[in-house]
Length: 300
Image (cartoon, rainbow, N blue to C red; front, side, top):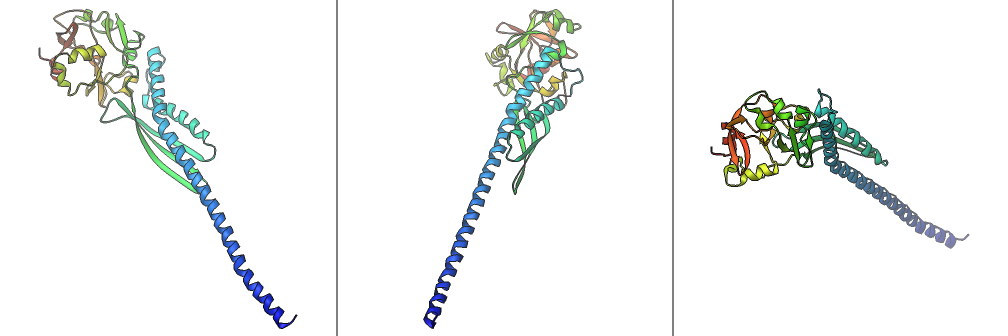
């Protein structure tokens, strides 16, 4: 090969080197792009799983609460029930099965606590920790959700008095409540009735119940109210008529007309009842003491 041939071969080699480098760069860029795309897809799957858990906790908790309330109604709950532990275990079991559905990642959710909301007795607060691992990605997040107890059955009357007749909205006490009471014109509650479902009273502040028509509407609809003396929903599942938590109370409508009879508030009637004076609310007869008249703005 003459000198010209060597020059041409060398020149060709020099041209090939940048082409090879460019090809390697393109391959590297393609690999990085594929890896980024895979990471992005994995990250989106993890986000979807997280939202699946977050959205499912309130639904599952309400179903577990309703199922536990139905057990109270049927008389199958143990007398020494730990409602918080029972509900937490029920939610945990359902969540574990949901996590297992997401097979392309290591997903777990630990239900840390189930408690009544400290500022709202019409809500249960569920605190959980979600842990997700997939590939090189790891995410842990604490989730706190509030679950309303409105439109769930009130288990307390059944826990205190046993089996009672009821329909979808009200409880018929028959002679059960009268037999539970020990004195004080207890006959007023022979054939009493009360609400079956927890419904938040929309009339606030409560003192406006003394206004025309408000208390009547409240009694007609069987509304519930915040109470520092009544028990919270979880304690109602346990059959406790009072508790240290912010609780609930509702009216039970008597059937008898006396000048004085036990106060027509559920937690009063279910514990050591005390007397109240008759108050006629457009045909509804209820008995109120001074403290409850003041709370609801009812002028004797």
